[in-house]
Image 1 (cartoon, helix red, strand yellow):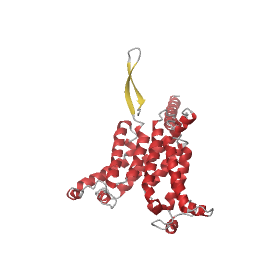
Image 2: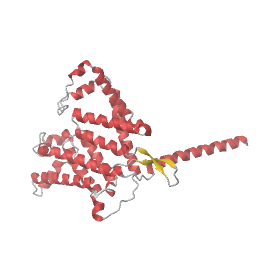
Image 3: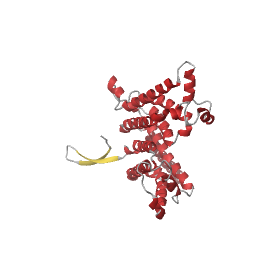
Length: 333
């Protein structure tokens, strides 16, 4: 009887532990989050970065995407699957209806800017993000030789804007139609976004750690001497030849920041510190390597996912003169 009682007691404890684990996982992924500031920030910041990136490309739009581009379209089409819709295919299709390429380019420019503005002001941002994603991919896939990391993160940002109800708060749509903010549960999408960025950093750091170029600083040395790097500040890095340990330290630091990101960014006591380290790393990349839009997108991703998660401690004095400490979401303003 004692053995049977012990077994039943043990099974009860196991079931209780499993139930607690299930409840914690369910709350983590599905508990409704009343904090909505990150939605408005993400929408406005991503829309602004994409708009600035596109306006920077506008003077050279014809050289990159038109039939008179630097690299001929028939060469770039060799590396593009036939099933993908590219900008050159859109131009060719509209030409069958008598619409000239110059007209299509002008409509594309206006449409791209208009959709960015709709996203920023929150006017049916989900529909605008969907249309902009289709247009952005058409431009990106048709001119893959000119694409880099910022373009792919732009596509992913637009994808998350489609998933998030980003225009339910602080939006022009609510202002015009007098709508009240909705009560959607966006926690599952938010957790997906947070896990996504955590995995991206971890595997980026792991890839760097597998070689030796980042450990000895060679990759840092090559990066700061690339033709497009250090063109704005024109910093003299020649002194690093006598202090090679500095570039090695920067390489080690980059690996540690990226590989340890999933561990320290989720741990509340170190969350703020790791967020600042990661943002500082991207600011350095922007200033030294001149990768402004890539750094801006990554900084937006970091702030969106984890800055608004950081709680702030506040002392609340009740009417009975009792003082109690409680955690409230950090307000931005």
